[in-house]
Length: 408
Image (tube, rainbow, N blue to C red):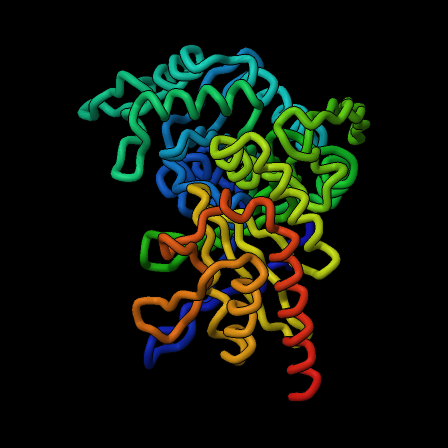
């Protein structure tokens, strides 16, 4: 493993010499797998979840060493919305890791998705009680462990977790302090040839000791990840994997990602699930709309909302509108990074094409498209007019490119 991926960082106090920080590699005395396992349990914000699945809520550590038939999962996290995150901590320098890390993760996933909510809750509560300190209270239900202002009510939380278990939807992380080149080649089997209902990612944690502060600097980095499509079977032999593609089906109301221009993720699946709740035919209409935008260079960014992003030839990132999971459509964010006359023309053009009025934000300086009766626009009201939205986007892109050519 090359140890030159990160240059040495320095702490620069005001009026004092810079102090270089020494990198810590796991396996040296105190700093072992258990140490890193506890660090990400105590400080889950160190995991780059926003880079891997930006649509997920905050993750809450619920237990360490959850027992499954195939072994013990190092770290288990849940979100207040019922999303599941598993993390396995590994010493990257261990030669056996190159094969076992993927096989072990797949074993955990297989066992996890065979569980129902009752079994999953029991396994977590057992591990949680085992790790609870003497004075701390022990939870009696899974929703108690993630209770917060942003949490679902108990019934909705149970339904969400159950749905993720039955559909095989989770985020699986393998976390270490460096990556062996052969591990990356093994991982490419997932990236190039297979997709899954779960998202799988390799995360590197570069750890540096802060002198005289009894603390550490942790630099997380997502090295590689899969995009989620459909289930696949992976057969491992030595350090190599062979993928058997499944039969693709459109059971969830929109095109399988393998035949769509847009790869799937947990965030995108959650968005389309929300659209399906609004109308069973809505996911297919939105997916067709997204596919029609691909030749224009418009990229769907699935977060808590679906954001339509386009980057101009000069590198200006434009938000052409977003669709919230509730169905609310907003276009006001197109303003700000390009000349106002072009963004206002886009709003006006879109309004004319879909026969809706133009409104102004409370400050009165920014325009957006809304409905006649209400100032908000709902996706159901424009679901059959997506082609006209695409026409407005295409004209907007042409105008921006012409402006940049003239300005340049």
